[in-house]
Length: 329
Image 1 (spheres, one colour):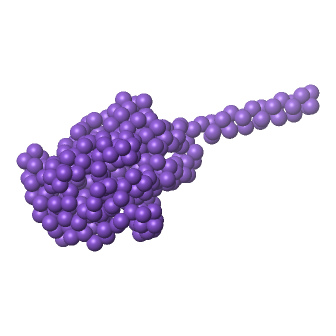
Image 2 (tube, rainbow, N blue to C red; image 1 turned 135 degrees about the horizontal axis):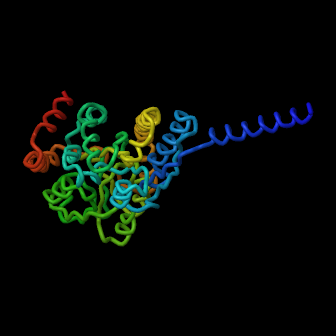
Image 3 (cartoon, rainbow, N blue to C red; image 1 turned 180 degrees about the horizontal axis):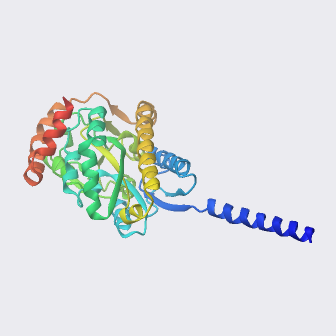
């Protein structure tokens, strides 16, 4: 009888261990899509986000990463997150301006003096208020990551003055700020997704494009361009979003862990971008790209800033513009 009881007890203990182990092993896997390739800092930041999430939630939440437009272009993925078929997505802020027009304030050319100015705006009351506006569209804005300060590349000639842009077919995103700006400069703006851009440049369907140097490098756009001008004409943040219903369904502890992990991964990616930029420019020069590093941006700013600001203010008022300008001081 004693032997039976000992065996029974051992079996019970083993059973409890299995049940407890199963409970601890319960993991929610969230699908996270984005356009950037695996070679970009966006993917590195997504991996860091995943590591932080697993650590902060003790394995309760992890990410399944889908870079390289695997789940579609930015607009397709944003719609999928709103509909709940994808859990998380990140893309440049212009891709969200159709849902929240006020986000266009971020894309006014030359509105940010430098990175510190941009971070103060995005991480402070202004940026967090803009993220809050996404909630009415079924999206929980988690954090601002970074696309970066935008530069100009083309296959025709060096761009040093606004006149050099006239007549060029320029790929832009769908943001009206950039479409208007390049139209003012006499270019022919052609909106298209990043996933289509390399082929469009290679076949000369477009002559030029404007992205931060990190994207020009990671997406290999330099292979089908000849000239790079460091115009820094605009700063674009990434917005990391999650399906709001999915976020709201989590415990407060898990919600806090997601928000903290997203913010920390964003800081990690910003530093990566800053550390990598000089080396990327040198690599492109070695690859045969002619780099115009010192561009006088005052004529560009004079040509486009006033009109683009005016267009934004007419639709959205001047409050956000004034707040952003004040933070520069």
